[in-house]
Image 1 (cartoon, rainbow, N blue to C red):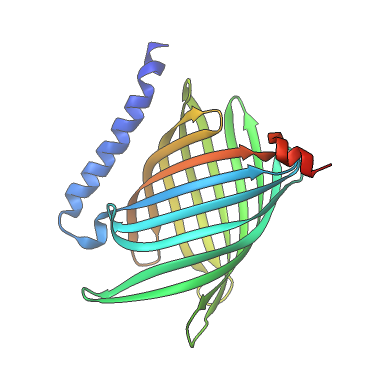
Image 2: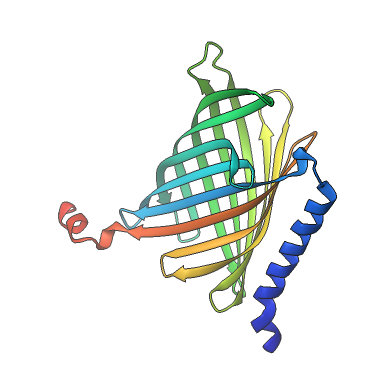
Length: 238
């Protein structure tokens, strides 16, 4: 049991060591510099079976520096059962592309999406399957290109000690037009339940495209709000 007490520190040490080793190998290669991926994810429960999700992401090419993109999505979620959920909604994305050191191209996208999530629990472990369809298009441009794709994510969460947990996921992106393979995302890290409705996790995040990889530190803060317990919400249902 004493080993379990030190396990969170061991996991953090392993992740840190891997990052340090990769950084040393990369040396001054800009392609392999570590970026940052900051996520704020919230869910507001408005009914026994309905909720409103909201996700905001800021991505930097270097650690908290060199803006990559800002992404925000929201919509409505319906609980089909305790284990499965349908969600649909819209998203916006603003991004910078660095074609040359002094040549920055800013673009905007508008997305429509629909997804299905299925969660299973076994021996305190949790597995979550998520399938999402996305319709993405450039806006504020003379050439409004459209891209349709499907994403599948498998996520695994295992308690480590008290409120600390291990988290990992793999997500595959497949385009429905043109080249099928889009990218693959992998996350490995640890998290902590900070409060009953608040948790945070941090770890190594990799995006693999056909010809290159992106290495990042991903920090996520997740919160939930139950508006059905609010007096105003209760009165409005009457």
